[in-house]
Amino acid sequence: MTKPQHHAIVVIGAGICGATIANELLQRGQSVCIVDAASSAATACSSHAYAIAHPHIGRGSPRLLRLTRIAFLLAETRWGKAWNKHGIFQPTKKDKHFDRVEVTNYLKSLDLDQDIAVALDAQEAEKICGIKQSGVWLSRGASLNIFEASNALLQEHEDLTCLWNTRVAKLEQLNGQWFLLNQANEAILSADKVVVATAMDSKPLMSSIGIRLPLKPVRGQLSIFSIRKEDAWTQKLPRVGISGDGYCLPAQQLEDGSYRWMVGSSFDEGKDDLGSRDSSDAFNREQAKGLLDYSEGDSRSLIKAGDFVGVRCVAGDRLPIIGALNQRPGIFLATALGSRGVLWSALAAKLITAQVLGDDFALLARLGFAADLVSALAPTRFFAGALAAPAALASNSKAVLPSAPKAK
Ligand SMILES: Cc1cc2nc3c(=O)[nH]c(=O)nc-3n(C[C@H](O)[C@H](O)[C@H](O)COP(=O)(O)OP(=O)(O)OC[C@H]3O[C@@H](n4cnc5c(N)ncnc54)[C@H](O)[C@@H]3O)c2cc1C
Image (cartoon, rainbow, N blue to C red; front, side, top):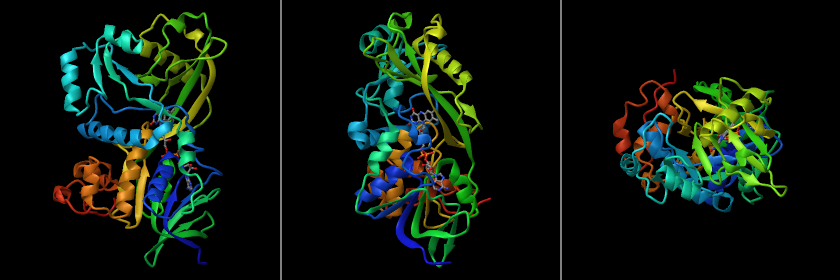
């Protein structure tokens, strides 16, 4: 093997996830090399320009609810000017009775202050958000152009090396170092520590070092609709984001008086084709009616003006996979961000950096990372016996993860 260039830390994948981690490492004074198969950053799922972010308040495991709260606070701080804070309204499910006291107590139990989430009846919601439905108003909810955010994070920096058009096919460990190999088995780089942030492609990369990850693709299409200025829909279009069965951004009025409105997203489990589908637009038209509670709306008035199609990477238990791969010291994983790339990448940046640099666990705890939450994200959770290590979670010194049994 000829001696390739060596870096202390290499990040593979320059989507929002890898870019955010690389940026956090730079901010912590580290030198980083980021490698991507494409010719620039954010060309895959992170080419998305209309991603929303808010803490999860619906049904879900208690850990998911706690994690999205922490991730939301981290994301809000991280994205700064790019954070488009228009607020997001989450309507009450159609089959559910709205009880303000009950919802308020529920939000309190999630540790969500009134300035993050507040229960509104239909009259109040109409006044505050222009939507005549009961629900929860997330005034700090926002959207982010993740394509622009990823590129901004990887701007020139003296400690940053970007290696484009470089597909890593395999990883190999030799004499305590990690080697990144291409398809022809040639070493591209060597590194002490490697962060793998290649979404679905983390699966073959991990399998090259004997680790099986339960990842699957979920294709999604977001539709961009145009609505004529005299159309009845214009009386219904929202001035805030809405998140429920699907989501939408605030509608924008253009100079000619017409509106432009993003509504998404379809959800095709197990599919990874990137072609645009009429059936997905039809699905989004129905979601649009549901979000606005406007069943009588004429679908034909939502004229297709564009779309975004991407493939989400999802883990078996729907949580992201973020953390050190204890079975292979020096390898760190940040993948399976699913439909929450904005939140999970902000969280991954803090957690992976802390683990790469061996921070004291107290630092992470200050950000709200209780040990059980760190374990819930850890790659080791998929391997036999991984959760049988509660004692390790009581550590208040190093970020201790569950013991590392052999992968199945
Ligand atoms: C329709 C749709 C709607 C969505 N809506 C939202 C939303 O509202 N809010 C939200 O937060 N999220 C949303 N998401 C999810 C979000 O877009 C993703 O979670 C996020 O973009 C994933 O980022 P990533 O960096 O993990 O992966 P990617 O962006 O896919 O990046 C992976 C990178 O790795 C590179 N790579 C892959 N394999 C290799 C290899 N072998 N060697 C070198 N490089 C490699 C690729 O070129 C790519 O640049 C949505 C997704 C879809 C599809």
